[in-house]
Length: 249
Length: 248
Image: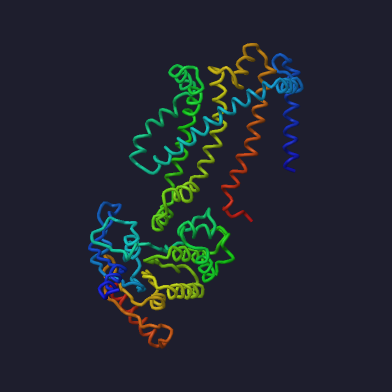
């Protein structure tokens, strides 16, 4: 392939976000300005974390990227075929279908061996035939992860996927997620207000301001993260926390 | 224990019936033995099976037409405000139109035909199915809808695995109340304009003042509906609810 061809393919696989304005009509009649000028892009296989104060419009942004909300000014270009995998804040499983059926319904083309491997990694092999009502929240979130990975997405959207889990469990799930992302690079956008989670998973952090949200700063995370000194990580954490607090004021 | 109570209830019923027939006389209320004998006689001649079969077929066809169309309209009205506004007055008219008016008009307009009979029954049942399913469609979970859209599920997959399971309790409620309503109306339709079926037989018996025969057919038909309830409706409900966590 010619260099231009490679460049073309890379461009095609980028996520380009250029939102100019998004507001909601409030129940009281006025309008609520949620997103301001918000522009960033992700290259193929890159993992970025959106970090910002709660209520700053992160979920709104994800809904726009997922095509669930088309009422905004600006443009969004999804990578390649635009196959999406998404993990919502709640697991959002179909309670009347088993774990395996939930995954297969979202990913009808997934092969048996791919699903076996996925269930193995996420520790779900023993739970394939259970209904979501029989699962703990931690297991249900794993199923939601399995479903998002099973579709082999061009873009993976994670909306605070580990919120309301205890710290130990959240850390374990984070490791499993990192393992899945490392196995086959997927362009990923992670929304979180947990700074450690962002540093632990992302190549790059995008700090958002309070509503109406715009990008305050971009910070690369050095890789591989595992060999970074703890002091270095702590310093980074403090730096980010400081900036977020500034954004709050 | 449960079974014993049911048996006690049945024995009490038969005893009360027997006492009633002693008081009122066999012409007004024949005793249980006489009615049982009449059922056996009708069964031997083949008339019972034929009439039950004919009536049951009408119940089934009218029921499925009403459920299918009623549920479809209910789903559309529950999801679209425009359709709801457009359809609501029609629904109120149909709900409040007496069954008898629909039956008589159907026979006048379409003649004393099978089509008219079934149409009249279905039209009586349809608005109730619509109203019930509309309620269900209004409470569909938006979050699951979003999930289905993000994962690009096809229309059929969404209907079968996302929408219909949410509507199932409402459909079950509509089916329950619908089945008993439909068979009562089918009997009236048969009485007024069909040459066979349980309703027709009861009409003939009424003209001859043959209370034994009226009771024989009524009891036989109730038995059939009870069998449908226990052998068909309840297992179906259990299957649909299999995913619900069992109470400990």
